[in-house]
Amino acid sequence: ASSSTPPSAPKVTQPLNASALVAKPCSSLTLSNVAGVGLTDAISNSDSDANGKACSWAGEAGGAVAVSWDTANTHGLSDLYAKQSTYAYWQPTTVTGYPAVYGDGLGDQRANGDCVLNVGVSDQLAFFVQYNNPANATQACSLAGKAAADVIANLKGGA
Image (cartoon, rainbow, N blue to C red; front, side, top):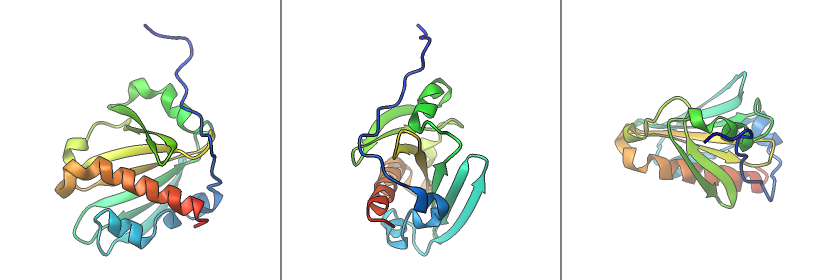
């Protein structure tokens, strides 16, 4: 049964101003945060494309985590909810009280240690964390969640 209106994401009850982290995506996580998800001596690399700005950290011993600010979607998580049927997996959750969803539009690589978590920080803005570490495949989604919680903590702390 299809409906004429796509489901919308849960509302963000305590929106956060993410402009500082959107402008400098590598300040989304500290080196301590990156080490906390098992990546040692990580090197950061910022990037931007039509969808927004991102930063990734690659660990010396393997594995990576990336934070991407999706500024192209102006309705935050609701833009993703509208296309959830195209996602390889879709698991709504929350991260420290913020609406979130584990889901990847490119495929389900969780068994290989690649997990994507999308988090709404306002009704207009979402970010996603992609955690990838085949050596730690069973922990990929929980570590993506830990990194996402760190981003929110850094936002609240005015990082």
